[in-house]
Length: 116
Image (cartoon, rainbow, N blue to C red; front, side, top):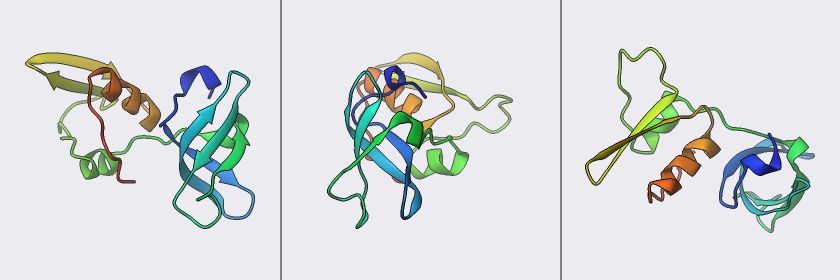
């Protein structure tokens, strides 16, 4: 990932030296890739400083999408396309990772309290 691909509020995977890979929310990011993230655990609750190199995107799965209220269209060959219907208009976005879907939702004015 590149710092330019991320936004404050994005949920990403962060490798913590003591507990391994953890899902965390970005609270601060700069152009050089320094991050401050926060996760609900004893190690990162007060915030954790890291770099983009220590992070990885969270791949979307059907389970993650369904857990957060999305409907899966069975029979669709490429499920990496998400369709949004906002005020009767259809928007289609190509997404592979959670932070990409978060960006698409924000552009459509949709805020989701993600359940991981």
